[in-house]
Image (cartoon, one colour):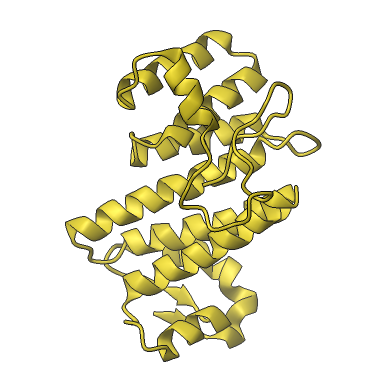
Length: 212
């Protein structure tokens, strides 16, 4: 189901009801991005459209994060997360489910990273919830542990931050703390942004996770 762009003002009010409907019902809000996808020569299946829309929103979030704009980054990552959750309500094969879970983990960790930006509006508790969810969807995702570790540090939970690091060592197949630190500080080679926007890890006091 596609909600007409003429009803855009009512999407927020309709969202709770539409999201409560059982699978395989899936809905989309009409947008210029969706129109471009449907009119393009690429397949216009619901899953593909949602993944494209989610990826577009994630890129906007990355740009906002690079500019230290927490509110815009969180808003964009939230849109990416919502679109991916919509995709998971469609009838998907195993490969599509795995893809959706992986990218949902990335978008959740990205939102956690934005919430951990230092300054007014920093929300370590909410970031922790996102990072824990990211681990659930993709236990092999290094950044999910990194953001949990950072959030626990901000919240003053030293024991819990050490527990997260130990779990990361086990689940990521690493042997030493040095290997874990190196993994946490390694920028993502698949990131298409320029080097300034995707600077790697964070140093003491900088309070940054990195964006994938």
